[in-house]
Image (cartoon, one colour):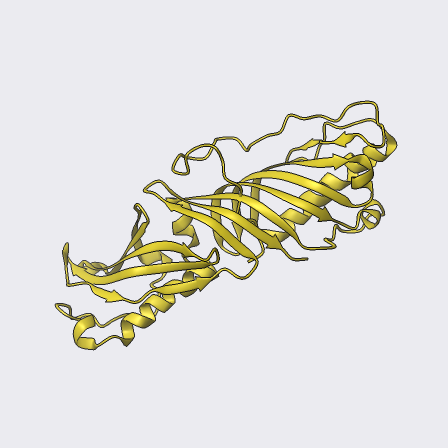
Length: 294
């Protein structure tokens, strides 16, 4: 996993994300002294509020577009991007960016959809000399990204076939197929499925307090449906689990006895440290740190 997870906000995790990305109002001064703070605010168009010295002009003219281009190259989709670089002129001119605060809306990374991202990356080192000569931005060392990502119910629906979630759900159905046929098919003529139903058959998705419920239509002509109910948890900062999972088949609103399955655990990788996962009827919010590797 190589994208930011995200930094906690002061607002409640269950509240909907703000309609505009979090902005920064700091501007660089006009004196252009070499040791001054450089904190330009950068919007989606790559424009900066900083002006002054020739060095600062190069930074504000070339580095923000290079960062923006690099971010877009790492994601499938990125909208509402705003970021602010923080540091001394001398540091940034050497390719050392002490901190970048970033916010975005409607981002997609490897099929995972999020409505809001608010993160801060620290101690970033880039090939600024090459960027000034027109070369692409390149990271020179790993760095931490801390923050928060917000997934609405629609985001979760759109993310079910992202590689990470899809594999976890596939494992659930494989376990269902492996249990005793008498238990799995009790009160049902439908044998257990061996793979995740296609997205077009998903008819309902519901987030609860720590839970996720999915309902698929298996056969429209007979009103046959499949329901999966699971609890979402994080352990040790890197293991995302589907636990206490129940699967059941229904006809016309009548559900068979649920089949209870063992936990399915997905490893986010050693570079992830998720401090908190909050699931409410409105959204799923993850807060923590991810180390970005060049």
